Length: 178
Image (cartoon, rainbow, N blue to C red; front, side, top):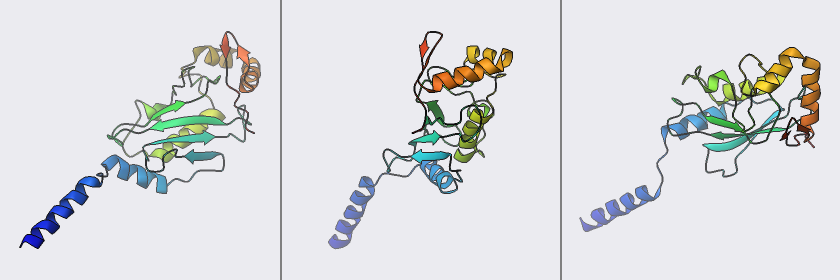
């Protein structure tokens, strides 16, 4: 009888040491195994044990942002998939849908988020912003205005700032992929 009691205590101690897997972690693990990323996107997990925090690099192979490498941080809270992931661009870039603090304007990260959406849909949405920036829903209003009134100047500004250029009082990060 005493042996059974001590075995039970050992099991309880082992259960306390092992962290519980949250529903968000399970869903993220599922989303990650179902990822179907093109060669222009790469994920990186600084801490392989932490699936809720990682980065995504997008290297567009066409469009006005071709040649750049854009880094996004993903922070997923424990209420995922009911809450969308928090996504930020870690570089200062000239883009109508990304402000100078790195906040991203993508409808599925805000009002159009639904729990049936997954990480793949967010990543594809981010990539699409580099192929077709949306000046009608901007965070960087100056860039959006330039894009709508003078597309050629907007493209020149994109090329200049991607090299780490200085434009209208703001220094932009060099995002040219090596």
